[in-house]
Length: 227
Image (cartoon, rainbow, N blue to C red; front, side, top):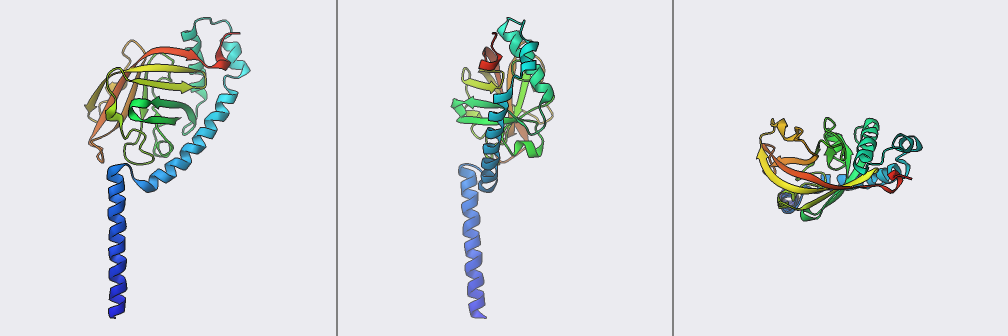
């Protein structure tokens, strides 16, 4: 009986140490188990995006914009066509924000399964390059914690969104903390704007931390350029 109690005590102490270590890692960076899962999903998303970039725009898409000479209008048209075929959970582009150490593929949709792969595009908002307010959400502590350091962004910081049809450059305007019910953050404001949304404070869903960034430039992908 004494030996059994000793073994049980050691097991409980070991479990406690592991739990404390897990909590420590989570506090220092992110939840480790979901991070491993997200890493696998992100690699799959990268492969999927590579395939999409190799096939888009298609010949039909190229014909549709053949007579459009305006770079901005050509991107907007291709964005509309690309968005019409995007499926939930599908890899659609890449986010690069050096100031928050972000370089990840993002997907279509903000449902639970989609956000486990990486940041997700709000399906009710336009696609980058369409001229409206583009909404993107991401986890802050779990599933790779893509928006862990979102509060590092400052006015003027660069955010680049790379899509199969082009690259859009945004500059951070401001950040705000709002209630989860404040859907007005993705309203149209008369120009193209990018909105990042994540839970706030860390380890809580009581509020949302919002980043607003204005589009300041764009470049067509090689396959989308006028011939």
